[in-house]
Image 1 (cartoon, rainbow, N blue to C red):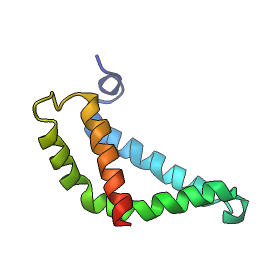
Image 2 (image 1 turned 120 degrees about the vertical axis):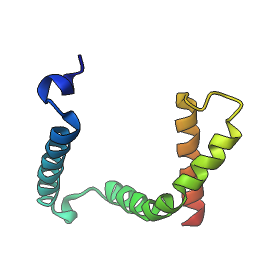
Image 3 (image 1 turned 180 degrees about the vertical axis):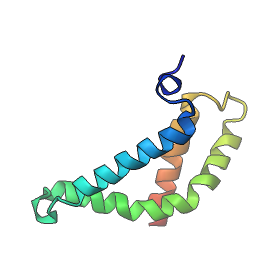
Length: 97
């Protein structure tokens, strides 16, 4: 039996609230970090990923559909589909940025 079902009767309900509480705790801890204490390389990476987030949001579904069509002769349920879709969407997001 799955661990979630052992801990909660309805893991989709209780699991949602547990993950919500963990996310709030993580945000509260991250809010305590002073931006001046972050190493410059990490700050550049954070800025780069933040700049890619909106273009990635805009193109991930369309890119995934194109990758799925291109990989249709293969088994699209394979992990290679996820890797190819993620790489293609990230590349397109970088080009859009």
